Image (cartoon, rainbow, N blue to C red; front, side, top):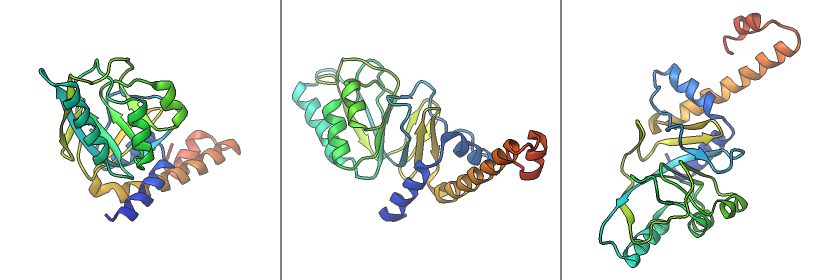
Length: 220
């Protein structure tokens, strides 16, 4: 998929919602793409969608402040525009995103950031409008204790595998990973489902019983 196609697909996916995406995947027999429920949005009003760029890191003993910050700024330089960064941090007590990093990624055209670690500087990031999904908040940062280990390789968040080329949508309800090979077809199916759901809604508001509306449109 070309970058232009990926950007267009990301924009279409951003107009969908996670529940409808999961339904479309379930109908294809794919039910293992849900991110852990503990990963929540800083701003529940924002939907994040796009192709993923993965990173994995870990805590390290003997890491200097300079080494950790050089490694982290290397990540910020590497994350590609148009992507959603998905970070497996392997820690739950460190902030793997903060205000200067969020502003840098936002300026570089990254769509948002998802991690199984924590975040800090939440008020600044909310004012910035950069979508961040994380599993908690803490003022403790990574300096001298954590650095990235790998980029653009499959990672696992909870029980969910996320691979380069996959697409992700995350909103107030949670996150769903779409296998890259199915992404274009799934988005088209979700768009069709949402149109049908609107017809079901209209029918019910016009007095059709929910059962008859379901029989008529095959959706609810």
